[in-house]
Length: 253
Figure 1 (cartoon, rainbow, N blue to C red):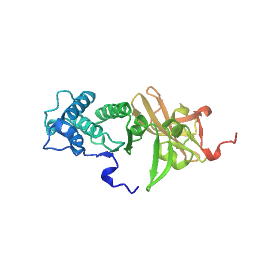
Figure 2 (cartoon, rainbow, N blue to C red):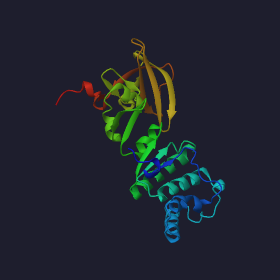
Figure 3 (cartoon, helix red, strand yellow):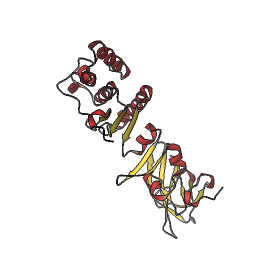
Figure 4 (cartoon, rainbow, N blue to C red):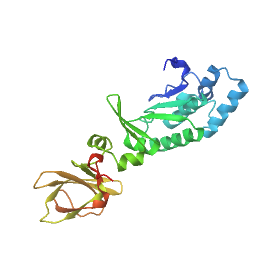
């Protein structure tokens, strides 16, 4: 586009938020409206509405330097929405927050921009963040878009090995992906596989097994009470109904 940057009506929320330290919460949120020469009554109504929507009611006179990380995040979001942009660009704005707060704020952000009907582009390296917030995900490498699909399509039909690696698939074979929950490890002294890694991930255990014949590895998600340990020999059972063929290897319909 040849339209000057300042006239494109795109707002960017940076990783470090860039709130104005010499302004209070109200003034930060009102900044874009004042720049557009909106009337005082209109500005006040819009700011008060956004303070309520972002759960910051009563915070208008507070110094932004006295806010918590989550509160600053909401002020930055409210400021961007107040300017009535066509598009909001979020540049990894949640990376500085601890995990529980990050999950809460990103859910809050997704709900708010959907409610306001604003197209929002999120730049992130966090797969969980992308899949929980997005209606569509674009995978990029070296400035090029490799794939752009909705989250369900990406996970059920990644299409190729490179996309599968981007999405974090553990068991990527030449012609298909085997989800970790499709691999069952069964302790067996005569088994071909041996456990080389065992870690707890929430309510499950992630077990990595290596074939004593071919050397290939498989990752399995097992219950917490799984009896196997490091160096336990196992045989494996794979649920073929969960295998995901890569698109170039799918049979033609």
